[in-house]
Image (cartoon, rainbow, N blue to C red; front, top):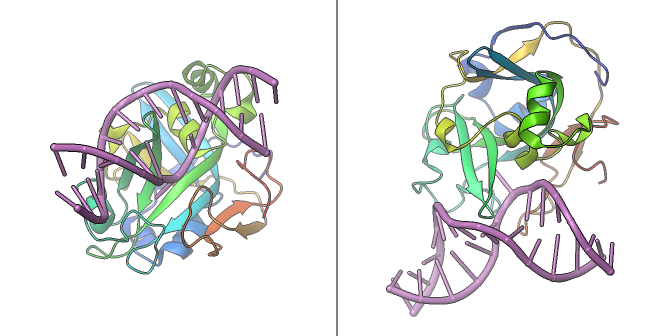
Length: 204
DNA sequence: CTAAAGATGTCCT
DNA sequence: GGACATCTTTAGA
């Protein structure tokens, strides 16, 4: 996995993949390929870090208090993008999980770029590949994800989706506590590819 | 209506 | 290790 250069991918993951327990989906998203289509330009990265956020049982989740205008997509059909704006300047990308009516989302925190790197460098205004998408807001900047993609259906294979890698390399999964939260901080619902240099923070 | 915090990144010391 | 940018959303009055 750490040095996979395969850029071919298969069809988008189906609804059934997302329509399951959020923690499990978070784990299984590791090693999958995030694909962004910008007209003729194709951007791809292997997901190497993700966090699970649930509902009434998860005080750290946006959905903890119930549905609001911002989080409503978390309560909808699984397999859609949940993009929110935070800190007055950053976007974060999630994919929705669990059956419709039941909230859940997985925050995509980091990816290993494998295609469209020049375009990502341009968007990020940095030259080091390791700095392109090793963090949730860096990733959305590199992949050109903003609120216009909120609620986008990820099973259609259009502007944004997730797919199986063509030739997956084996890798080990590690878990840790979620980053940047102040409640429910004991839960180890952050998953990442062990020893992968594109993970945002390796500790814990 | 108002205030406070936020699933962060960058630059500085 | 810490300050700070910057503004939407939300909870609570």
